[in-house]
Image (cartoon, rainbow, N blue to C red):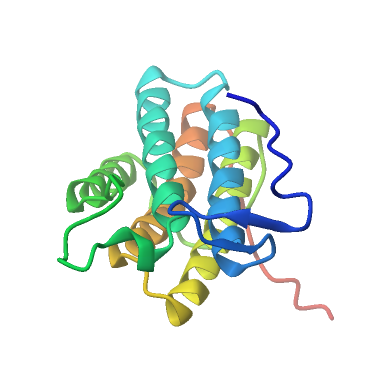
Length: 191
């Protein structure tokens, strides 16, 4: 398989199913941001963190490839006239969402209660989590915008929403495991 095809040299790209769209299309922005998020999660996974976190992050990366495939598919080309699926696209399942929720709950049980907003930082690994969380929120916003124009599987939006929550709690959990103080945001009222 050749890496370069030269088919995108004029500013368009093909969706899964063959439809060509401009490279700035919101669908491309959506799955491109999911790809960016996946790279940031790989960076977190490459840190010196517990294997349980690495294993879950690897699973999340797999699910983000699924999200990317869903978003990269022209919905009009995905279903045949008889209602059957034309393309063999994996799905995000309710179990995928529940796994994130259960992981959030388990980590939260082991953390002190939050009393303030938390400033990102304190340790490089924690900062990577916060960057990934912000990229995840952007992916969610873009996918939500796409959904306003072309319907997206609702579980994709739920998954991205839950994933950003997971990344926030993971940042807190890693702060705890790395013995890093969380920096509370206390507004400066001197202005």
